[in-house]
Length: 256
Image 1: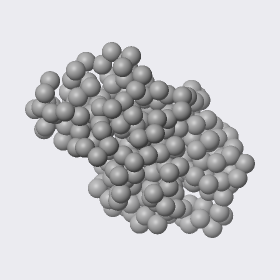
Image 2 (image 1 turned 90 degrees about the vertical axis):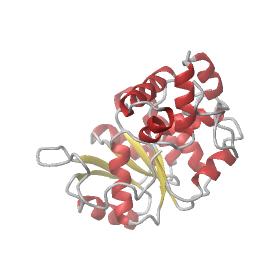
Image 3 (image 1 turned 180 degrees about the vertical axis):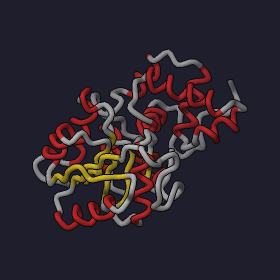
């Protein structure tokens, strides 16, 4: 689980360079001035381009299809269809399987954040995030990683995930899905550590495995559940009981 501010700081993302296709960003916010400010910021980055702007959730879904966006920066509160509903439609559309959603919220304690993650968002940031951190967040989520805003994120997730998600949201029935997925002991262990917020490198060090082996385990867990990305693995780990709110993890991470 990546947090903002830990990657680049407004420059070109690692690996980006001449010939690399820019990240195609769609901006969805009902406030014209907010969209304009974000558009100027995104266009200032050499590895990104704005391919559309939407004022409602339904516009965001339609533009995600027509503009071939890689990533949607999605406000939660919008008219017609809110950001959670729009995220759910994007996540459920097989034609939009490669589209990531980064949710923006005014308050980090917004309970809608968890519903957005359950709906399929890859992460969230608060709107007063520094410009360089927003650009880093876009790069992180576009690369397929999960991103949760710094601050009381862990407490927010722990508190809100005490209430099971209704069927059909996000990874569906996480507790049941994890039980039916046929995960190996090692895969359950890796899922628990992902739920605690550890990166692949940290998991590798803790379990005395190579980062590539951990990446393989994470990919297999995502396929078995199934889950779109690490954000949904975090949700699944909490809601299945592999990670218990208020505790550091699920059992001894050194056990096989």
